[in-house]
Image 1: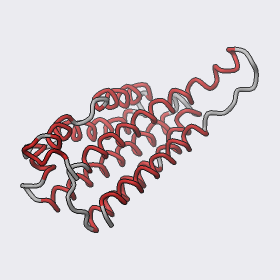
Image 2: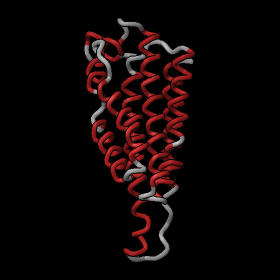
Image 3: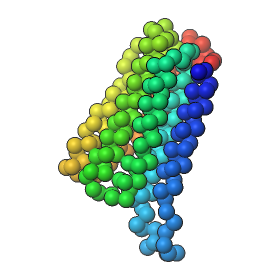
Length: 201
């Protein structure tokens, strides 16, 4: 499979995931502001999940710009990421419907942890295939992805903390989203610089 097919398939799956999430926003029963109030938690969960899925898409896009070759391990790692992301609509809808409840919040954190782990697994497989002189490794300058590791720890903490207070976990989800609103600049700059091939595919 070519890199282009991998990108196109991934874009299509992520678009479907976002479409499924928005379908959870039900039409309110009534024409006043009070009718909208029960939908507020569902809407906020949708916004959070949309931002997080969008962040994965942005960074996935930038990371694949640094890919020269695609092998079987990369394909399966990418499938793992898409599988984890496909669980976001379920977790988002449950957390929105049962806002403030520990278990749905913990499940949401576990799903996001799975997404973060799968994304890092994909990056590792790309680095393994391309070696230390590959575009991605050179863009990262051999450093570990500190934001990625921090995100995993925050998601991991959000699962047990949901049973202490779901609001603490919500704050951790928001913290991760704010950390990643700007794509990984190391990769973004690295694949566009002449030193790593001007980001040409």
